[in-house]
Length: 70
Image 1 (cartoon, one colour):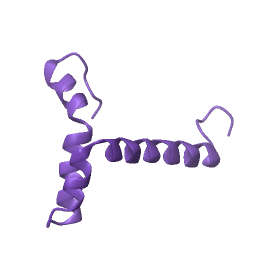
Image 2 (cartoon, one colour):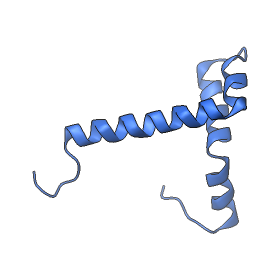
Image 3 (cartoon, helix red, strand yellow):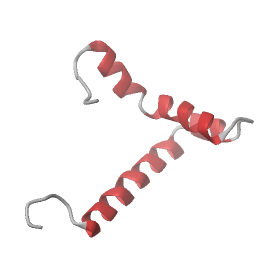
């Protein structure tokens, strides 16, 4: 399957790299630990953490400087 994108090993490595990057960002952000300790469901924590981690992306999208794909 030449030319059809990353193979399974490449996809796994990409997933691991991106996941670890998100975890590192979360650990650097004091709000991440605060969110983790809140008495709410994991789904609510994930939604709130997403707002914190991707706040800069959301701001760029609102400004019109970038358009994210659907």
